[in-house]
Image 1 (spheres, rainbow over the protein chains, first blue to last red):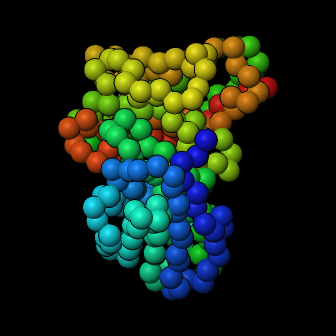
Image 2: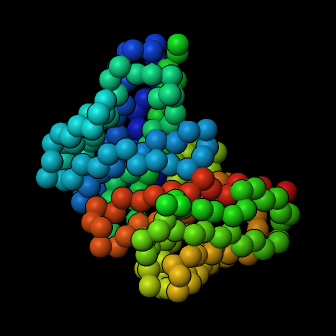
Length: 110
Length: 114
């Protein structure tokens, strides 16, 4: 079963617009991570936010975490065609495994 | 610096057969995790190996087994294949002392069971 759930399932935006996706999870966590997957290939780590952090930035990415609501959001600013991919949140409760959501498919139109 | 490599890229098997997938971790990594990703779903944790032992296992039957070698590479074995085992199998490596459990993924092995 999936630990997290992403919302929306799919998102289509124009190049240059911002893309926001949300993730909810069920159990307590040590950290939450976001990964990107292009066309059913391997996943690429984007950003990690620890349970005692509320917001984190990396380039055009902004992640927030609300542990009281068990939710996180990923914002991609000034989107590019190369951002077209599936985005997954993954929660880490210990050092052993990541629990992934079902993902948000983002399509950036030129 | 080579990343995580998996072989083979694609595999076609029939029901009841057995399959072995292979993974070489990123240089400097000592931990290997395996995930199964069905079409349209997120990856599901199968198990993780560290120091040649299985540290934790997800909700998968005993038909799924693995091994880690002294050079940290790993194999995933699946016996008595079912149609439902068709999926992308992902290997991920990490460094146990790295903190945060950031995992580096290979490109995956696409298994089709007919």
